[in-house]
Length: 443
Image (cartoon, one colour):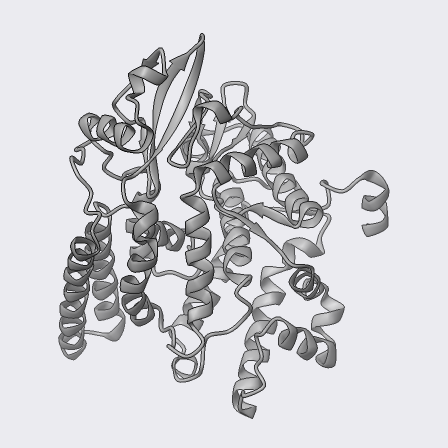
């Protein structure tokens, strides 16, 4: 793969690149309006999505950082995003041009005062994996194979300015209104800043390992504080396949269910017991080891859930609450889905909309076990998301709905569902993460 000898780090350089990308998107919209005159709306919109997805990804991939991380986040929204965006933005998980060997050494000297050769017995200057925030190299020290994650230059310093520049383009693409949108962008900004603090990531990793190591068939690498800093992390090297690669070739259904159960239990234990969780569930963050165990990686993005949000959120998973109009309305207000300034029409529309969404989305929680390989369930999710994305009435309403905590909670559940679907896990025991006494009570 072609490598990068430098990354634009100044605000002016990055702004110029993003403005150029925005200009291309503007031209695509002009073509779209012309295409609508000579073809159907559906055909014109498809061409627009393909052009925008390609131009945006090409514009962001060499910038790295928060702009590309947002593309990676959007690639997980398979049931909401147009297919063109999902396909193109998914490349940000695996196929990002890495830093050249010379720039790697320069980055070490700049941030750490030493070269890789001075820190490790062996160090491969060619990256084995590159993503949005950093890239991974293989190293060796004291007889151990190690993975060293290096943060790209300038990423941390450019997050706020990048998001400010990407914001108008994102709002245009995804029909976000200006009023009330700052709280959502601020939530993303805070999490991205966390992801660039590699010392914080090491501590979050060690804390997660401490609490979750009891989960069957789940493994974690060891992390080494003395070989880590704010800009690089050293951990054990674990041989394995990325989850998507494994899923594409696996024919062992029992193994798929074993790994899927470990994945489900990992998330349910974090959410319900720790009230904080690994909020970046894309295939690049999970390996299947040579011993056929699930390996969880990358704890830079960890989301804490306040009790007030947790209680209201999961009370909506109960059918009796969704079917009681008074309780349902109360929970929608608590979760900021309904607002005090809503018109009667908006209140009715969003109540009905979220009732339909929740009735479908919470289906797995109504059963003892769930078949995540069922394409019909995911087709219905996709069709519902597509229908609302095209709803003209919704476009004319204040669509900024829900607590800021929804961003990473929903992202995590959609990502988890899609990973289980990718695995074709067809027998996931929903309350398996609970102690036996509690499981009997729930059943």
